[in-house]
Each structure stands twice: as structure tokens, then as C-alpha cells.
Image (cartoon, rainbow, N blue to C red):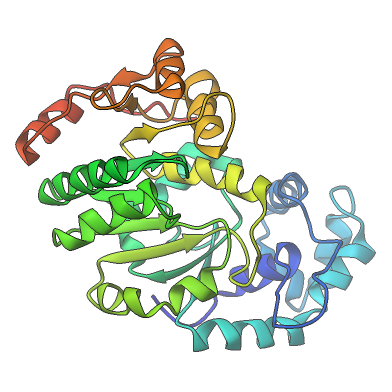
Length: 319
């Protein structure tokens, strides 16, 4: 991944990103996703692109955008160039790269499946091409027992042997075990983070697999952002949108982000087939997901059986 930001990405960062550089409060007037989408549509209608807001004809372009966002607000956000340079220096010192929806390297699956709901900016560390590989999302609640973590690691290893990436979070328990299982088996994984990308990227245990291009750390939120429940829920969309299928190993009943993410897929988004663990201890949460349409995981014991089971499912429906 190139260390340089495209002009469009620079403009999108100025408009939508808090640019946390270690001190001070984030800008309160950032464009929300719906506001940025409205601006982006207006720019396209005028055959413009975000970078034109900073170019020689910026005054003319800003005048054209008055119907989408207040001009003074846009000018204030675009004037944060020094803050952007500080933030970029901080990110690059931590091997963090940035791409926007305007870049060709932005994950194609996210653009195609989420469309305007795809995050305007993504921050990452590691091999960005992992995001477009065939993948199995493996998720579970924080309360998952040790036996379920072992189970998730086993499925992660099977996916690796089938040459599928594993997509999850780095949350302790099921999610982390699934990723570790894939990496320990020589496979690749993508961890989609709702917070603290800076800290996770600097974690010593990730250094070797990042250098080997086997791990991708990805987040739609500022690398220094702290945990937020709402962000964790929104992050679920990315995990499912990057996958070809998903396995829910454990879930609380009617609570928690694992439950909320799976229900959103089953009832509204329908991006991927959702499986639930079908052996081991009973689970009220998993039983409820089955009632909502989740499929029983066929419990394959070989990479070939896993490939066959997933190939039998209908392809994901685009949003």
C-alpha cells in the first residue's frame, strides 16, 4: 500500500475524519455519512470530484455545493490541512495506511454490497488485498466459554486449509481464537476493528504475520478512536460485507453486538448466508437465530468438506 494519500482521499478526510493527533477535541462539525453522500452525489452531477474542493476552482465548486452542505462549514473543514498533516505523520509512523471510496484500492466488496453505506474512509495496517479474497466470518459473544474458543480456532484452521480468509474482530474469546486458528494454520485473516487501530497495529504479537502479508487490520474509525458501542454495532456490517458466509459460534439472546449484527443480516441486509454452531452446548441465542432463518453449520471436519458445504449455498445478495 502506497504511503501517499490521493488528493480525493485528502479531501474526504478533511470533510469526514476527526484527525485525532494526540490532543484536542475532535471536530464537531464533521460531515455525517448521509451528508457526505449528498455532497458526493452533487459533485458527480457537476462532473466534479472531492479533490476539486481544494483545487484552483475551489470557490466555484463550493458555490455549486451550496445545495448540499453549508459553504462556511465546508470551508472550515477544508482548512484543517495542518491537522491532517499531523495525523498522517502519526499514522505512517505506525505503518497505518488510509484509503477512501474514491481510490481503486478500496475493497470492491464493500463498494458493491454496501454502496453509499460503505465508509467514506478506511484505515488499515497490513495487506489490503486480503479484503477482496474469499472469506468466512466467524463471530461470537464475549461470554463464549473456553471450549467455544477452541471450537472457533478449529474452524479458523479449517478455513485456512481451504485457502479462505477468516474475518472477525480481535475481541478476546471466539473472535480472537478464530483469527489465531487461521494464522497458526498458515492462513490469512482480516480483523475489523471498532476502535484502537493504533494500539493493535503496534502489538508485538502481530508484527510477524503483518510482515508476512497474512493479516489485515482494518477500521472505518480514526486509528486513535476509543471504544464506542454504536461503532461496534456499525462495524458488524463490514465483517459480513467482506465475507462469503458467516458462522455465529455463540450469541447472547436479544442483546449484544453479535446478536444485533446477525439479526440485522437475517432480517434486513441478507448479504451472506448465516450459519450457527450446531454441536456442543445448547444456546438460547443460537436457537433464536435459527428461528429467524440462520442455517445449521454442517460441522465439516476437512477443508474439502468445508468448501463443499459453502459452495452449496446461494451466492450473497447485493444490497
